[in-house]
Amino acid sequence: MNRYYGANQHLDPLPPFLFCPSMAKNPLLLVPNIITIARILAIIPIVYLVMQGDIILRLVALILYVIAAASDWLDGYLARAWNQYSPFGRMLDPIADKVLVGILIAALAWDGSFSGWDMIPACAILFREFFIPGLREFLGNITVVLPVSRLAKWKTTTQLVALAVVLLERIVPGLGLVSDILLWLAGILTVWTGWQYLRASWPHLVEEPK
Figure 1 (cartoon, one colour):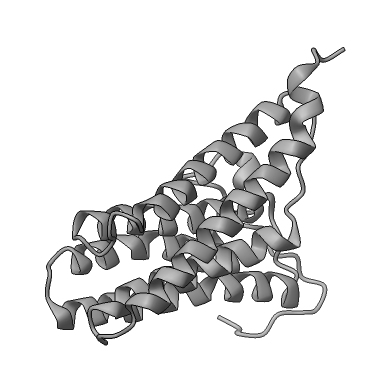
Figure 2: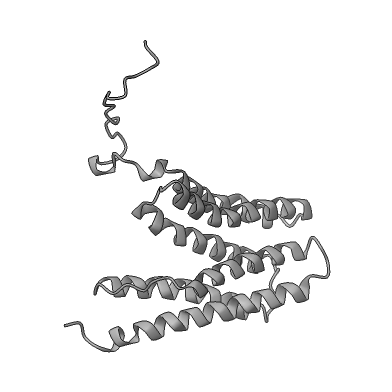
């Protein structure tokens, strides 16, 4: 078979097999979305390694976590650089961040990495990450959109960095104060951005839609 094709030759896409016809242009095959899905799947080995209680395995978990956290920047960069935007990717990216942060907080609470005081910002982070998506879903029913603020993006970055230092704390002694400061900073930013979203949406919560 000739390996070279004329410039005007039309190549029909493969017929959809696992997807409906409208999904023939499969967003799962876009590189940024593949990276996002990999970030979600990475939480499984990360949590498993953390819960083993071994320092070496915790170091491996930290390395995997740093790679997963860095992919949050990489998938967005590639989507912009290669113009590989998709509604599926816009939907999945914030979910991946919340899954990574939320499940890791649960694992670190389970293995005793958090003190009693640490659980205050940890619970605040979990509450906000459940509350705001629920608020967005409700407002979506009345066609109100809450755009993501720049501070909310910094909030996510601070959460990821804080959890990395908490993971590192048992590997490198003496980081307790640093991890506490970062965790509380992440908690404060999380609560503040949640309050901003609630304040912006309040008029739509106290009035019946017309």
